[in-house]
Length: 495
Image (cartoon, rainbow, N blue to C red):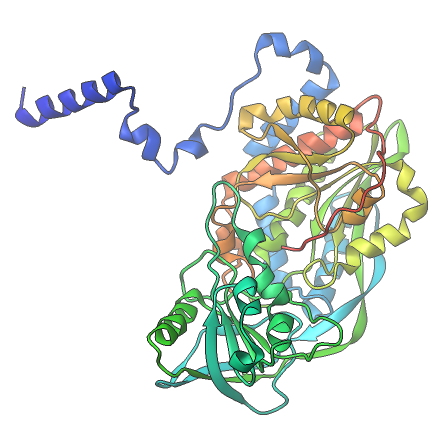
């Protein structure tokens, strides 16, 4: 035996003796994608026998063999472009979806009017003028005010978070731009978005209270491709509105390094942002009528609007087509559900939540007939399961439905779930579910110009369609139905 083979064999034996796995099993980045799940055992089948098992088998098979999710996503993004609420692209998307859903054979296809905010980005130029001149990769945050028709130039101070900002004195901040440098961490399988996003949503008002003239933030995202990430921000009532800008991770780090070395840093902002009066838009609704209890509703959907930098493929074109294609496959296979499946494509999730609120107001009198609502708004990464907010007894029943998805790795049903658009339904006691997905790479592209259809993997998108179709079918078939539970008031958050 050659020497290198002898050494390799000895190392392998040593690992086995020590109880260690081979490097391939622990380090391969593809292992999780290939180890999708465990098929059901024969003793688990009787509790799922009948129409549930038969329907799930056909839906998973069809979704993985042939579905139209990728082509619908590409066409939505290419034909309509970005879809910020109140924009031409959003109006085009509403009309486009109404036409396509009608042609797909859905029933009761219609638009439900909502009034939405109209924020216009305008021009954006952000330049470092000291210690040298360099144009920075930056974008205005959604809802920011502009600079009033002329550039705004000021010295920059840096601090990591809202907590450290609050410890500064007005004398240290007054007349300056504040740079918030908190880095979003990439977690497995979700993300560090929640702990980081407050610098985007609340940074401007926190800085303005101390006399700052503008706020700059390190983009809330995980990518390192010199891409700024936009997103919604808020102004507290009674606090001066100051411009708010996101910098690419690389440029934010450069400014932070310069400041740490006690160099004088000065930045110039020229922003043409403005908020115009509200305009009319719409949620898009379509149905597959139930065969026995058509008055009872299982809602599934995502949000049709997007930010304006990219074409909103992952956020939330993917969620739209996952729900759309799931419902379409149920119809195509002739699996007419016991209850009505209602597809809802919400408008204005990103910068106002008017679509979710509008749907709730429109259907308030019929909430008792809403059996469940499912939302997809976490990109196109492979499905891991669902989060479910319901009574404990019904959670156990939904976990039984999850067994149907265990073989594709999407069978884990955890307590607590839903989405921003279905938040009002959840608060009123309607059981809600959120599709849980692997989002390790989602925030590389989230709210950037790179949020385009090529970022969606066709196989993973197909798995999501399968998971959504099986869960929607199962909830529509359950007998007895899921029950409404005592109303609560959970926080609503946008991604």
